Length: 377
Image (cartoon, rainbow, N blue to C red; front, side, top):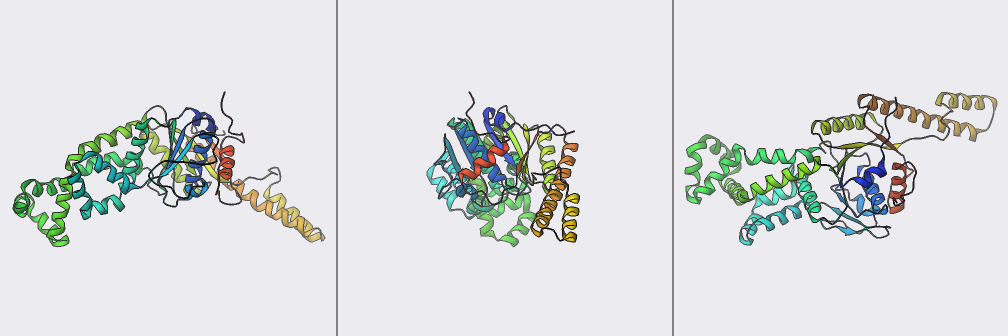
């Protein structure tokens, strides 16, 4: 039984948030950009947010730079903005919006904040949720397309609220808050009273001054913790709400489709709305009726009879391509057998990388079954 086909245009016309997720290296950024461009040229005010550090999105959209501010994409027959998440800038903006200037500066100057806002594990995913919430709150766009991080843990995007709450409610934070609340001079006395052995070991490892910096940092952020929780939960709820759709992107390869299965199962577990699966870079052949075995046999007969070397070579190229197509089809059949209700759409492998709007339009048309991006009546 064949899988149901993903109706891409219907999804683009009805969704308010479209999240593209999947493992790295499967063309997820190109897919997100193509979907955003097609939605814009179908008449929807669209913004695409990429979290991909490779910055391929800026190149394909003809932008010299892509940063934390939405920028209009030139050459689009419609309204399309693009931006790239700057997690430190997003974190800085949150601090400025929710603390007094002097306290904000103290946070910015703290070495732990500088590390956390730039490279701490999980910060990128949490800030992506913050930025998504901010974009949605403006009401500026009909559709927000989100390109999630190019890692195996792309669904950390969904885990950000829970991980943040666990961290904020954890024992380590309570330990670090104790000295700051008691005052600087009482630092070791207060902490040692309840956690002497723990802090003694920690102080030996990272040093008393460093531990003080960390405690002061946590104390400075304490007043913002509630806001972090509330906004993260609000965005998490938004991802589950009507109007949100997830698209899982994969390549027709064993590992990529295994990851796609993981994403599909996790989204179902979280009751997140899945639109379907995009299988990118699929190899197709114009002569599907000519199998790889028959093509190779014909090439051998030409060799034995002294026939055209060019024809024999073309037959071998076809045989290789047909073999790849069969192997990819079998992998997709396994996926669909495990997930029979998940709609699927294929995108053909291109001869080169997508590097401009025309290339994105070509991918978008393939996603929609070869149709031009006509504005619905």
